[in-house]
Length: 435
Image (cartoon, rainbow, N blue to C red; front, side, top):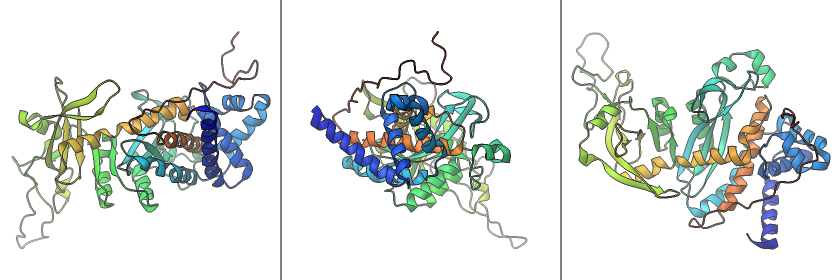
């Protein structure tokens, strides 16, 4: 968009987009405050918590604007799922201008947080820090093709220490129906809801935190979906052409045997051991996409295996699936492993391309945090945490829809807006005294 006419058209699209978001909030004042909140999230500024946004949006009435923004995000009763559905209805057609949905990406992201009163905060692994620390973690589901992606579901992971503490739950306003669920359990619920709402299906992608759960993979397959999920090097597998021993014939006494067996010398091996035993001809140098400076390339191998996790408790082996392995040239050991139930005739280059598409969610979270302020919410309650995230995704969704107006070969260049002037002497609460 160039010139005043282009700006007006962009502003008109933004206004129409926010009309659809405001319509599901159920109240005119609430809708107006949500509009202002999304505008504040998109405006330049180092901090996207309520008070600095109020100062940028309405410098002459900071206190009144702060009150309205705080109320809509922390106090007002509205349905986050309805807002995300309204975002999806508007953004998905724009995304599909560049091809159908190809992927459903499950992931989680952490937000460093001090203290112990903010909902869900505990010492746990935080991807943003790359280590265990005090943080909150949220689980999301995104839909994507090779051009764009959009989060369509988002929920806080509530650790067991929180789920079983009535006093802390009450202070943070955790709904009664919310109990402890693992991250794969939350992701599976989001996948089921997306199916129920008729979201166009894609290959389910996720890192080893999800793929390592055999029950999660089996449940995704049971929904009629394909997946390509990371697993650990220790994953127990039957090599190509092998399987557990069949159920033995009934001997006529006692209960008939019902489970497959292993035997000395006939046992599964780890994914790492399988990779290390592959001949040199099994590895292929494969490029999956163009990076910012050069093509992204590595060495891969793919083979058909059977998962062996607890198969002694089953009456038949797990179905065969793909094991995809990445072993960069010069590395001392393989870097990554994936399991997939994609069809037998899937080419290696296609397996690699699909596996590497998970980078889209990493880009989403980077922009949501750095540009939109996803991690800047300063409240402590369940409602505020999710309302802030839903409006962040709404603001981000508009950016994604705008990017989809451009052909894939043309890079999107963000319009550099000047930050609105703040009131003279304005200083957010908690900021250091400049004197």
